[in-house]
Image 1 (cartoon, rainbow, N blue to C red):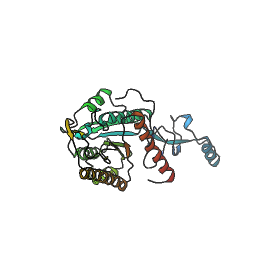
Image 2 (tube, rainbow, N blue to C red; image 1 turned 180 degrees about the vertical axis):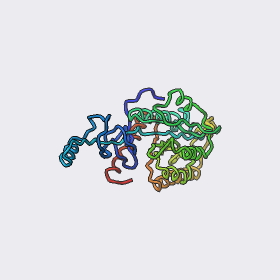
Image 3 (cartoon, rainbow, N blue to C red; image 1 turned 30 degrees about the vertical axis):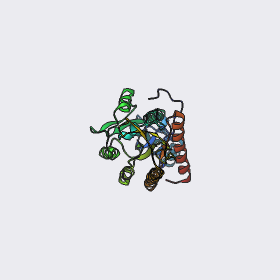
Image 4 (cartoon, helix red, strand yellow; image 1 turned 90 degrees about the vertical axis):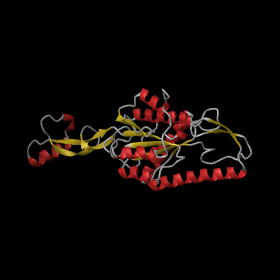
Length: 307
C-alpha cells in the first residue's frame, strides 16, 4: 500500500447529518461536542464553561433568585468506514505487460486513498471480504493495521460470483458494527454485478454505500475495433492464455455486452440512489481525482437539497 499520500478526500454523507462537516458526526447521545442539544439546570460538578450566562440571567430575573442554566451538546462521534473488497478472480487481472488496467495496483491505490482519508477524518475503519474459505471481517477501529492490509491485498482472488452478496449479508447480520451512517466502500470491477437486492439491502439499513468500480475503460466498459488483430489473452486465474483473434462480429458482440453491463449497473445504482466512483487508472493522481470528483458531486447535491 502507498506509504505516504499528499491528498485525501472529504467524507461527504449522502444525507445531511447534524454536526461538524467532516471528521466527526453528531451522535444522538449527549456529551462533549459543538452542537447545542438544549439546556438544563446547573448541577454541582458541571463545568463553568457550559453555563449559558444569558439564559441564566433571564431566569434569575424572572425568579428573583440566582438560577444557573447549562448548555447540553450532542456528542461528536468519529465516522465509521468499512472497505468491502470483491474477491472474484477477475479482480486479480491484469499483468502490467498486458494492455489492460492493472486492477491489483488500482485497488492498492484505492485502499491507500480511503485509509488516508479515514485517518484525516479521525474515522474508524474496518475491512470485509468474502473469499472462498469464508468471511474476512475486521470491525471498524482507529486504523487498519498495515500488515493486515498487505496480507489481504496479496491474498488470492478466489471468491465466487456471490462474493459481494455474501459480504453484504455478513454486514447485515452485524448491524452494531456498521450502524446507520457508516460509509461502506464497495470495491469491485462489477463484471459480475450483484443483484439489485444487494444494493437495496444496504441502503435499507441506512449505511452510506459508495460503489467503487475498478474497470478498464477500453476493454471492459466498451471494446475497441481490433478485428483480426492478435490479442494477448489472460484466463480467469490470471495466467497467460496466449493470443486470440476476434472477428468483426465477435468484436461487436463483446462491445455490446460490455456496454449493456455498464448501463445495467448504472441503472441499478441510480434506482438505489447511489453514485459510482469510476476508477479506470492505477495512477495515484487519477485515483485521487476520482474520489475528489465523487465528493464534489455529493457536496453539490447537498447544496441543492438532493439525495
